[in-house]
Image (cartoon, rainbow, N blue to C red; front, side, top):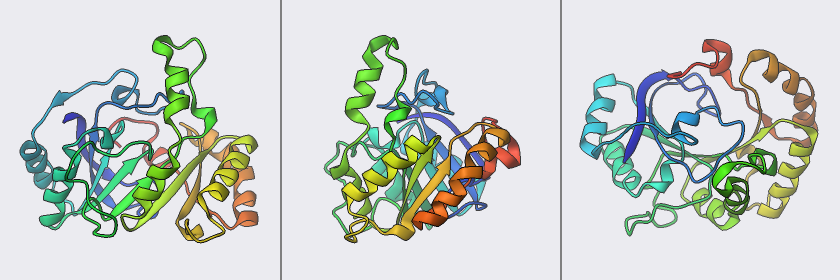
Length: 242
């Protein structure tokens, strides 16, 4: 599988924010979010193909219990399944970060309930505002729009075990769309657990995050959805390898 980088840092988002973790960033994505903060793993992917063994050895050398498989979109790689299995068998806590639009094309995909892929599925569905401009080459606006929402895959991933559902919010229109999407997914019927949902402000600087958080905090209080932050921006700035 193609790997852009492997590094250690503090998890900056979600339920495990602040946790020292090793990040394995795969390179390649089936979406093209216009605000993507890791274009070197999506728009212009870098990195080399690496074996599961070499990835495991580097993770092991960093000596942290928590491992985050991120991207790009790691689930486009069938090898993510045996990699996660190897890590978990060796005692690592594994989080997989995904947009929830694809499942690995493998016969080894775990069946619902056996929790074999990850200890935490971190799912970040992409709202319509994430689409790139209409004049983006290779018809990426249309391809992105067609691929970004796959509710059946979201439910399959949530059924695998512990999960967090993170929506990136940049505007009141994003908030409205996210709430409608959650309603479609079944937040009021119990198919989605409200305590597992996070609204996270969009931004690549502390100032941008603060502007959105100023109004989003009140909306989270009103709707009962947890407010998440991008702590790594405050801790390290918008810097690669953090």
